[in-house]
Length: 386
Image (cartoon, rainbow, N blue to C red):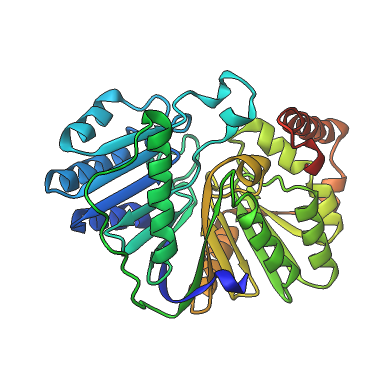
């Protein structure tokens, strides 16, 4: 893992859309040359319109603006909003335009789930926050709980080529023509801080398990604490075994998971794993204040990751994802403090004794949901690892 880290970066943590969207809008408004935005969801709500207007303003003043969205996550987006951006000069592409639920085939489940924005090849935003109003949480106390990170420094030398390459790949796959527009500006890689950073992606070619392997290596090396916050937590056997082994050697392992029901199948399937984890000494806290959408972790108050990858079969085996891994500086401590505050303010600990006393009907639903998920993963060729 050490070989992937580049020193000399500055990474700023942005908690929820309240911090992220104004920072993103201001960075787009300051852009002079190019903006690349790649996201799973681009909504037509107030936040989506705000970002769309910033992108359009940039395009009108001559900035090259390219937007890549997922065909399932952004399905139903207002054509008028897209037309307005295109009329302003924004280049717009849709990754796999057909919705993924039309057929249970592996290639249809391979979605663009990453959230990456690069501006002028010198600053990038990476995390789990889609372009959607996180104050829109029906029946919950807003905002939706999530994180992103703003990064500057030498790591841009790895982020920028990846973003450009994906755009070109999607454009070629849809139009069968190469991208030959204005030449790209040089990547700004001067030292900006003290953080050592790695940029990890998951795709279906050379980087199938990079994010999962980074997690596994960090968990295996943990000595004191592991704190993982994940919206859709359904790890495979190897990942679960790594957490159990860490707890067995005295590491305090804490999981901050979704307590609200957003997607019933994933919610109940995740809860089917609670018994094994609690019995092994893993602490589980359910976030019930609002929707948890974070995909972050802190290990030994030193290693941290922020990104789009859930710890579930869709993210780890099928979707295109992007995470930052950060070592050093104050980033890990700041993230840990934010997660601990969330657990105190909106979390409920799941106690092992209470979990064992559940009634039979409270036990059978999670087991059935997990069985169904395993069956579905078997149909797309991944049943053995889950």
